Length: 282
Image (cartoon, rainbow, N blue to C red; front, side, top):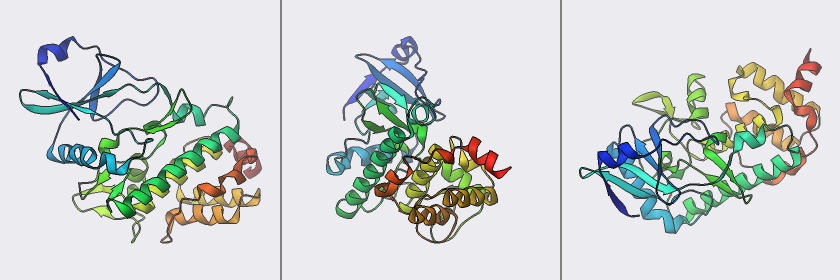
């Protein structure tokens, strides 16, 4: 990690970067930098963000997971760290891939299996390197499918690592609003809409992505009763009983698991699509 000194004049000359592959960043502005790099200028670089960046740099080589985007330099203006500078990753956000009707369900499932394997690598890193390390804000637009078919999980500066403070998360914020709290999901005492990431929350988000792929829509927006009805429907069309049990666990006190090794069972489950489900339901 290098420290690159900048001036406000240089920053003013940079061209804004509006990525087509993901939603706009809510905590920073993005700019084109030299040599096909992207500068991420944070609206507010607080102590927690600095600590998180330092921990990622400290443990990057120990974690050693290529699919996690951990390579960045620091941009400094007037002796203050205000930005990160990293290589531009060419590809498409996972949402553009998973919701593309032209892409076969089998190919989408293969991508989901890759993500599950990444979570397994992170679990092994926790067991051997650092106990407190979770993605936290795991959702489709924070994941890039690169042009060469690999996975990159982005925005790792919002991860949970080494006792830093938790950051907002798309799916976990919605979960917090449902007020479904137990030993699995613990609220941050200072913010009622932030759930502290752990293995269950990463698996919750992962399973939400799986269900979104089957449903072809954002199932996290469903009322819990409607969520359960849909899982019952998945059971009726022959999806693995173990997967069904795991989906039900998402809003219970049972651990939610990473069952990526069972996802091949979903390759031919086209009837899981929300349009077919609605026809059957009606």
